[in-house]
Image 1 (cartoon, helix red, strand yellow):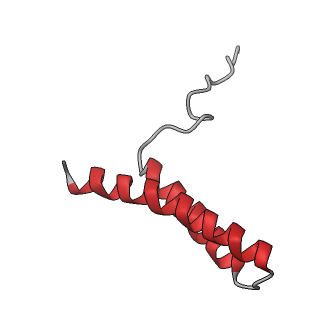
Image 2: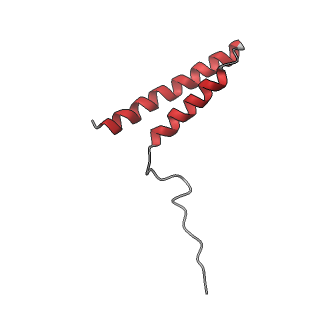
Image 3: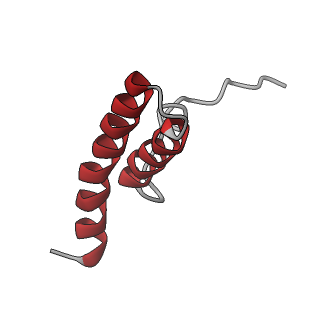
Length: 66
């Protein structure tokens, strides 16, 4: 397993954990829950990694007739 793959797996595990912690803090009324929300979204975003196609990158360009 490469270090890049290990990093993606780690991010795939920690992202949902941060989101769950943020949800718990939000229910309890703790004001730090947005920090956990941002961390969770960030870690989940890093799971895809650079160079992965997004949903929009696969769209074809419109034909330009001249």
